[in-house]
Length: 328
Ligand code: BTN
Image (cartoon, rainbow, N blue to C red):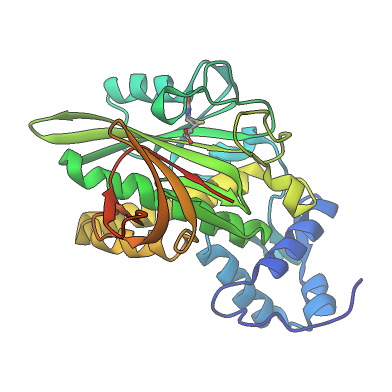
């Protein structure tokens, strides 16, 4: 057993290194973390351990109290077949070994009347798709999923939700792995200057508002894909396999929380949430938008989630669609 120490702030949010240690212990012990381990590792009695576990739960982690066994069950397996059980009460999960694209399956389920928070997750996709008609490489070990969202909202509201979802992925990654993920406009998740995850929001709108399917691809335990831009995987930075069912639960629970904020207050708070996870301000970028390409420096993010880019002549462009490349 390592040296004893008190996990700082355990009663509020559990720090990532503590989460990581607990998951490592869970992984060594078939998912079981005993009260005696909490005591020897952190000097916590049963009430202190319960407070720490509450912080893990409020961060989105799946934890079961097992009083008869003297501790907690905290699944740390990287087996997507566990996803249905871990997300019970958060989402209805459809797990498939192999699909062309989870987007297509989610749209088909939506057409058949599936409710919001139906999540389709697959081990492998043979025709994964990304933004701007790009292919999305989806090999085993990654986390590839789509979420049915019956928003009833007009189309212009939904962009904020798609963008803010990237921040919820970044936050979940930080909590579970300690990896310093951040969001790049509009909705890529990065580690350093390499992309680790991408989000794709597809919508179908009628008089009553829009249905949407949010697709999320995270390179987790798969090798970084060979694509034309720098890409990475979480396991490379975390130094260990990352339990995908727990990551899926964290991301979907956050998305659900965001959706509730969105329903209550509209896109404004989501814009702030997103802005707190970006690192683009001050960076030089190449923008391709509405048939135009230019270089400039990012000076901020607008309330409408446009990216504000100062051109060489001093004018500031509001970028609302397209693609942005970080320059060295
Ligand atoms: C992007 O960055 O271009 C968005 C990538 C979105 C990929 C995910 S993987 C799960 C879902 N199914 C797909 O075919 N695409 C999305």
